[in-house]
Amino acid sequence: MPLFGSLYIGASGLQTAQNTLNTTAHNMSNTDTKGYTRQQILLGTRSYINLSSSASAVSYQQYGLGVVYSQTRQVRDVFLDKTYRKESGRLSFYETNTKVIEEMEDLFGEFQGVEFSESLENLWKIMQDLYEDPCELTNQNMFVSRCDQFLTRAALVYDGLCEQQDNLNAQVAKMVDQINAYGDELVFINKQIMRMEAGDVEHANDLRDRRNLILDELGKMGRISYEEDFNGVVSVKFEGVDFVTSDLSNKVEIYTDKETGFHTPYWKQLAKYTTNSLGEKELDLEACRMYDPTQKISTVMNTDIGSMRATLLARGEKRATYQDLENEGPYNRDISQSLLMNVQAEFDRLIHYVATTINDVLRQAALSEPDTNYLKDSNGRPYQMFELITDDPDVGFSIRNMIVSEDLKREPGNLSFRLKDDSEDKAAIRKMLDAFEAETYMLNPNLQTKTNILRFYNALISQISNTGEMNKDFQTAQEATINETTSAREQVLGVSSEEEMEFMIKFQNAFNASSRYVNVIDEMIEHIINTLGR
Image (cartoon, rainbow, N blue to C red; front, side, top):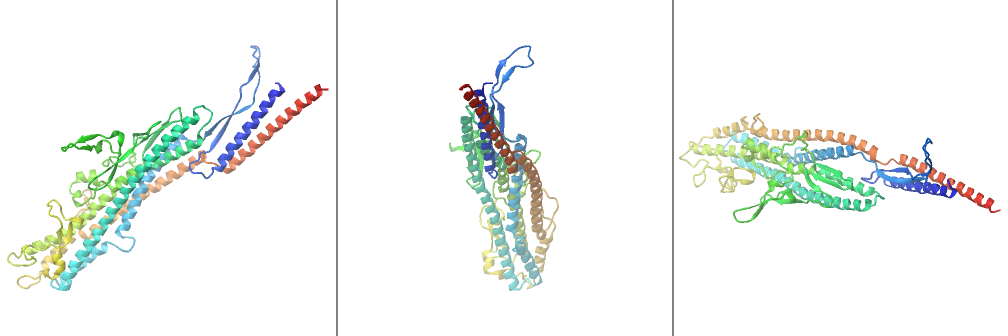
């Protein structure tokens, strides 16, 4: 090999060693950078120069031209990435459910000393006192007061559940904005990667790190699938629908219900419109909505993935009332899987039972004395403790549709429970107490075990607690899975400062060796020139 040609070999070693040191330093400087992937150096040999290609020789006579810095690649495991994104989405689903249930438990006050159950217990106690002395004005006054307190506290709890729905609704809008922002950024990154790697000289590893981080975040929000083509462009599907292509991000739009104000995300590219009787275009939401709220939640079907689905499902589609529990079919289809709607409907059923039970007893007692003003107003109508605030016959006694009678609040003595023969009507109060203790009430159509009004609330709280524990168990199991996956993932893509230090020492020694090699060749050339020049 010519001596001057040997200098190129040494120069290639110096250049390659310098590049590997730069890459190692880049790894070490990003040890704590979120989403950073360890970069690995691949070295190769330059082309060989053939000196002889005799067929009788064992091999060609060749000499090399040195080493080449062929590639800096990301060290990732595709299988672990997909597993992590799927399981982190499932973890987010149960984390969202657990948070919603914890907020409900705080709302009912069972863990802060201000229990809603106090109002029900106080109502029961005053009914017992009223039975002992139904004509005592103090007891009558307290009875009306306890009914008003019971309904007021019930309204506060129900409004709190509605406020939770509104908070989740606001989160839906924020998540849609975030998903669209991620889509736009993925398109931008795809274009940047194509531009940088078009000449097959540079690899856009830092851009790929950002893209992988976005895919991680999208995986937490919903079920995603993706693939990378030969140009380095990643296409993404979100919940089975094309979301990101090489140069396009399909937008997620929001439909806002005019009555409830609830947001429903839908795919703009799938939107279809119908024309109503007024000639106005209306969105066919069922044809393009992102999630089907009636779809069964199942790990086997992978329908328990993503904070977006959990948020929409927990919020529900409307404000639920006791009327949503009347039929098993609609309940199972529309209500049962929603954490908030289910509790709203069951809680409203309790209030409905209390109101209608008291009203029915008062009405029956009044009608038992047809020729008197017993328990009747000035118009001869039986008093009702709870009155509807609407004239709509289809609206029943729901929390938001009734108030305690203003007449009775002004004149509680009208509930004298004194018959025309001047005797006390303890029988009416006894019927009220018996109705509260009767085992004839069900929490929802799926539970066949019957309870009474006094234990109905405890059954509701127990159901919330059991649902919360179940979701916490799922969350704990998912956390263990994520921890294992993350650990295995970090072993592949994580940066170890100790390992990188070893590489730095190795490449520094390689740089020194190449430098010494160049010095030796330089001395040899100098010696030959000086010798021949004499």
